[in-house]
Amino acid sequence: MLSIVQAAGWPIWPLLLCSVLALAIIVERAWSLRTSQVVPEALLGDLDRFDAKQLPGVEVADRLAHSSLLGQLLSAGLRAVIDDPTISDARLRQVMELAGRRVVHALERFLTALGTIATAAPLLGLLGTVVGMIEIFGSQAPGTGNPAQLAHGIAIALYNTAFGLIVAIPSLVAHRHFRAKVEAFELELEAAGERLYGQLTRHTHAAMRAVRGMAQPPHA
Image (cartoon, rainbow, N blue to C red):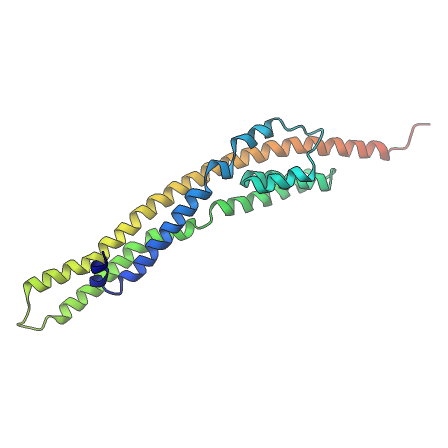
């Protein structure tokens, strides 16, 4: 492998860097996009048993925020209602949508870089091949060409194209796989957020009715 890298010349070094980055991103995303880290089944079950008449405390919201990405979304809604029990529906939705955008951003982290590597790696391989071919034909003086040496030089130049494809294909497959997982998680997060929003609005509506009832003067 080392002899191939040395023979392929300097154009293969950017490909080696891309391969290391792609591997690091694939491992990191595979670890971060586990169901237990994004939408734990236990947390979804707790959401079904959520009682809007008695909100959890701040400690529960803190634990939710550190449990998973879904927990961060739910914690944002809970904190908003705990801080202001009479928060308007529009403001509560705005808070949860902002938290949802932060969660989606965390889900999609590094995927753009992985897609860029998948696109750029074949081009870098082609660049290495072109550079190698230029050097090969430039070294062949008229009347002194050696067919064996020429064939060997072409094979060396093609190492760059092969290595570029070796980097690009797994990167592309991983990018498509992670993109599909992110889209599925986004649907689950959106559904869970809507369920919590409906439960929290029942609490805020009750709190607003209680405030209006206390504000009304007693009947004579």
